[in-house]
Length: 269
Length: 345
Image 1 (tube, each protein chain N blue to C red):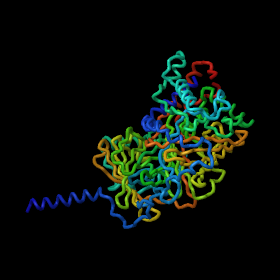
Image 2: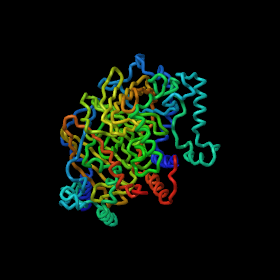
Image 3: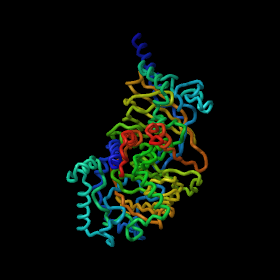
């Protein structure tokens, strides 16, 4: 009896853990279908909010550039991390603080480097999903970054580490599940210094909840940096403007002065 | 010196794109399909002998990875003036000679040449075949296979650009868009075969075609819904593309370029018309016409057959590892500080 009880408690505990990492309940919405019968996620999408500043909940705070005043200040946000806080290992929590302190010199976004995944999804720029049966192209306005999601090729390993990761996708009912690996460890999650290592493993879940919104859920695993896997989730919205299109934000030309300015020819030389 | 700077950029590009080479090399051998192109010139019969595969919504299906490596030159070499098509023997000889001349593993040119050949054959992927039609140039119009003369304004800009390129770089803007990692050297638009990463993947959905070049991972999203071009005030490195179907041919019209398009000194007046026709299961005929009266005395056209590749497109991180630019600028400053005379070339 006692054993039975203990067993029962364990089942409940396991169910609770499973619930934490299981996909959210399908909201019951069934998306329009593509020609091959899959949920149609084609479109130009963008996240709203301040996750690009800080994925954890945060009050508004002053920015790093005094001259930018209110325009450069960080807007508050409820956070997109489930449970509120990222489960850093102690050394990594220190490193995160360092990153935040050194934001201007350390954040790869500032140098116009490819933002990685999931950061690319919630940058304050639109991205376009181009959905075909074998490949789903995700192309991002920021830095003109892009990645190909290889559908139904679970054995296709990346031969090399990358900025945007190596993406393999599959459909689970209404949900596009993308497994992303082979990161080079040089990207961040946000402008607050939240980071990961090259052991990052991302599982993204895109589920349409209406014709114009997706729920975006991400599981983050990185045993070198975190004490356990953790999740973030947020809605992503369709850009509804007439004739909306991705515009160019190459950004290399905007950071040349920052990166190479000290190597310019001096007047009179 | 200049060449050394150039190759240092290429080195970084090559290193970051190592993964890309394998599928391309494999694909380069599958050129048999080109033979089905009846002359590289677009003719009314191109594609008429077969119906291309269709997407479920009825559009010609152009999707897949396409390889445009070839050693056929853009312009007809002067020693082949008047000769439009090579015989099979002549083509074989042309291939042999070209590959021999290009071979950086040669060590018969002295120390300076050896420096220029620091990147051995492993890094290069020009292809090893002429195009299936054995035309002597990729330029199909004018009929002499040569790019038309520059207009006076075009010449003036070309001279100014040349002067800038030949001096030690005062800043990153002195170098070309590829070395700055803004656009891919062979990705244009328009695309032209280059030293490596000559692969492009096409994606289609009911409202769009996307042209994704491996070189710097440029995804050009082309709406097909007949919407107007962007306002003239919005200029883009890759321009602004709109597509439509003419029969089985995808026609992409691109305008709104910046004052420095990624194409042979073209101006912001560049109006590019590209045509994609699947002329055989494994051959995509890519043609384009360049209209730019501020640069050339008349429009001109190019045809490049692309071959189906089973390889994948890989990430090409150029800017993220652009040690070449750093080294070019640091080298130029070191020269100045050492009081060296600027090299003439």
